[in-house]
Image (cartoon, rainbow, N blue to C red):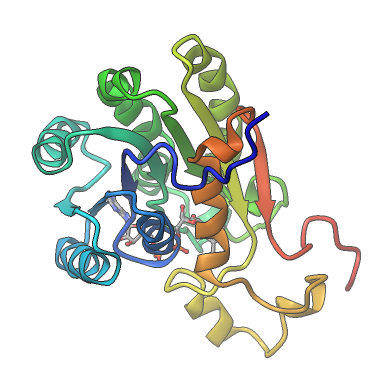
Length: 258
Ligand SMILES: NC(=O)c1ccc[n+]([C@@H]2O[C@H](COP(=O)([O-])OP(=O)(O)OC[C@H]3O[C@@H](n4cnc5c(N)ncnc54)[C@H](O)[C@@H]3O)[C@@H](O)[C@H]2O)c1
């Protein structure tokens, strides 16, 4: 077997939802660092634009930025048209957009439920449907959905988030069966506590070391440590991996530390 490294293969463009910040942005940087063009889709349009400009100048790859509210199903087709016009060969998707509820059982309303599920779960299906022709046209196409250790660990604080993340793991396994018919791979990445704008308020609110004492590696994760795993899964290095969950948590789910 040819053992030449294939982290930069295929060199097709990748759409990254939530690409303006945190794990999405770090995934875009990791992909751009091996020469892959990236399109950052985010509700924070100005931040997505800034990130796309910075990535293009740092890594010398074509980039695009698209303002989109993923809760709106009608917004996906125009976002894809804009992306195709700038980056013609699309062969990857990272779904990293997310929001977290903090109101526990008492905080759940029909609106917060719909908002959570419609950001985390539904766009995976709708974007893949819209991108099938791009994926079929470009061999080696693959998808990564960002789940969470909260798909597995129960936390009273965020029932909507936990349900949506658990749904991502099941959805990935179902879609993997369908997408394999077109030789497209799909996997989930479940981060633990990663220092991003989403986690920062909890870190600042809780006592020092609250998260770290449970984590075997005794520290929070960096967004780039997830981005590198996303890049691997979207590359031909991962050519025989589909329907999998890769946990990137420094040893949290497996920990019995108090
Ligand atoms: N940070 C962690 O510790 C952690 C742990 C496990 C899983 N995750 C998951 O990783 C993913 C990225 O989170 P992050 O930590 O980088 O957070 P982040 O807040 O830095 O990034 C999330 C991005 O999603 C975008 N977004 C939110 N709602 C959107 C919408 N309706 N339409 C389009 N874009 C929208 C935000 O604008 C933001 O840029 C999320 O799915 C999150 O649940 C994060």
